[in-house]
Picture 1: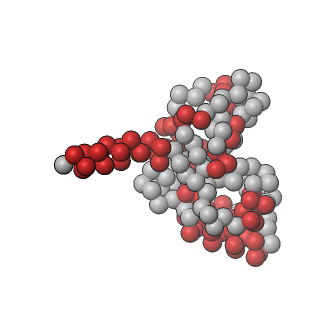
Picture 2: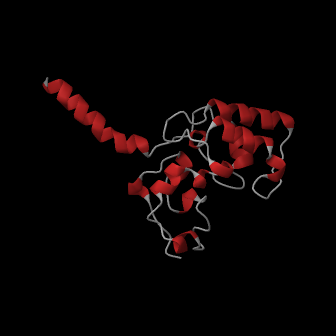
Amino acid sequence: MKTYFLLSLLALLAIPASAARMAMPADTPKSYEAECASCHMAYPPGLLTQKNWQNIMSGLDKHFGTDASLDAKTESEITQWLLKNAATKQKYAAFAPENRITKTAWFIRKHDEVRAEVWKRAGVKSPANCAACHTDAAKGIFNEDNIRIPAK
């Protein structure tokens, strides 16, 4: 009985840490880092659904206002990897409006206390710039204990 209680307590204590972790999969293709992370943070694929990733990858010629077209081989490799590692957890599995992580219900809920002026600061620029505040975002860690909001 005592062991069961301790294991249950440990499991409950682990929830906040795991909920803030969306680590990059070990099989992340070099092409994802080279192509996608050359312009913005390499977002963990588990932050969007398969449908969102399909939409994004099929519209690279108009990727959020930029032509991010890739050769067919690279596009296929990245697409297959994104689809394989897309959101499965209930929290992230809802379709993201406009294929934007920042438009998801969970993102809005987690950032509701962030004042509008913070997003406009030179050190932040936009809600999509996770690494501006989340010091371990590149590793897929979004723990609230590791947040540094730029002053300007």
